[in-house]
Picture 1 (cartoon, helix red, strand yellow):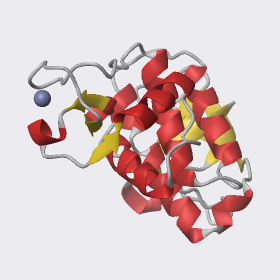
Picture 2 (cartoon, helix red, strand yellow):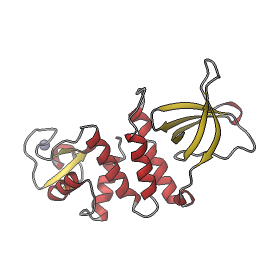
Picture 3 (cartoon, helix red, strand yellow):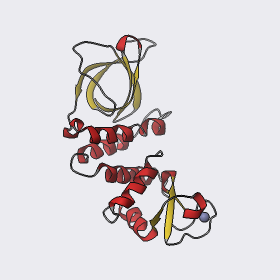
Picture 4 (tube, protein in one colour):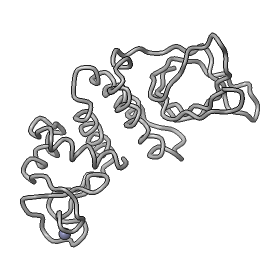
Length: 205
Ligand SMILES: [Zn+2]
């Protein structure tokens, strides 16, 4: 099966414990150190088999191969990717089975990562996730004081809108945010605005 490595912890003797998001679940796996094993890093998409005869211990990873993306060799793109995928583990923790949606969402993001601005992809992927989970707040009232929003809107974690004065946050033009919320595309936001939106998204899903 295929999966993204969302978390990677060292165990004894250079062994690893990996948290992997597959098409149907997020699970922990044990990976024994082997000199000839390929090196695994946070964020990699891998193809693997799971070995379940390990009794009370974690299932083991077998026959691991990496699904290659060109941008893995670009230090900056890889770093941005690793920061982004780390947000998924706390978000999906405590869920037993998952819809395929989450794997597909990350796979699509990874596919686009080479050619497009990664920060825009983060914003658009985060939006798609909130929309899918029914957590998008309409841009009409401030979450804090509940009064109508004006021309400038600040966003809290999970893109919850507020008055810039109510949360001391940097503001974005409401009209542009509405277009983003309608289309899921950042096309109408300039790079500076995307940077602000990205900062909010990276606070957590
Ligand atoms: Zn307010």
